[in-house]
Image 1: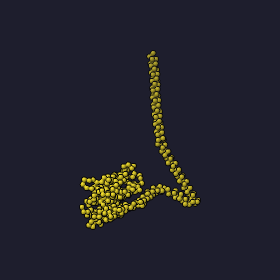
Image 2: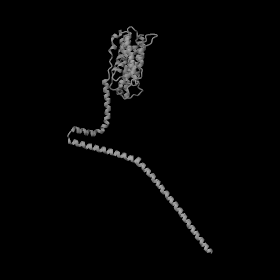
Image 3: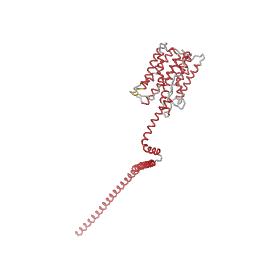
Image 4: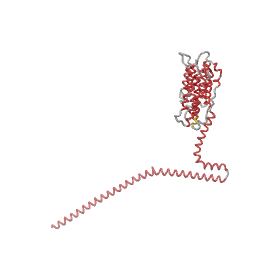
Length: 409
């Protein structure tokens, strides 16, 4: 009985072991299946990521690059084919010798077109600069002395007419600049062709500066009739209008050109009234007033351009060198006209042999007024155009100082 029970127990244990083993096998199989599923899922995820990367590479990087490469190759091939075809065509045409001149021109165009790409822009620049220089030399005006300012009979004029003549001499060149074909150019817009003719532009600025200073000084000295009186309103307002900024542009409403024209009209009004004073005293000119005007010319009008000509510390580009020269020229023109008018209206200022100094000063200023160099340069071996003008300026100023010292106050 005990033996039978023992055998039964052993069978039960074997059955339980087998059942447990089966369970374990099932668990292991399930685990392995899940593991395999995870691996599959992982591989699936990797495939998805790779597909995304391939998509990005194909459509965002490789595709455009390939398309660009194909386009370049296609254009290059088309250009090469066209060039080859044209070359073959030209050679065939030349071989036939039907129209030699046309054929050789065609072949020359084919051979030289790469060179022309570089030569044409440079050639356009050279031609443009050459035309500007030629046009500037041809149309650049001359500045002769107005015979009206140098008549001996001017000494016999009344004080009012002498004052009118001096104001006319001070505004003569400014009026000519305003009435020129292009008018006042410093306030033209930067894209306008008149800005390229900077010789005229800087000359006009010099003319304006000298006219403004001289008319303002003469207004105070010549139109103030004595103690308790004031200067003429027209000359005061006219010279004040000439102080407007030279480059202001406002479509004709209050811009530089309008202010300058108004100022010149007011000064011309005084000139007209002074010439027809009819017994009405409008001017009062004494030797001290003449001395003051001479000092204004020497120390105010001429000194500033001379300083710009002599300024060596400031480096100037090639295009800026001529600016100072033509600015000084504009100033010299106005001062020369006023000195000629002073010499004819008040010959008493040329005493003790100082008339020669005044004549030499006028001559030097006239040389600067008549000079229009083809090229303004600053080369040690050839000299310096600014230095040449500065020498004339300095010499004229020294001679005018001698003249001023001879005026009896």
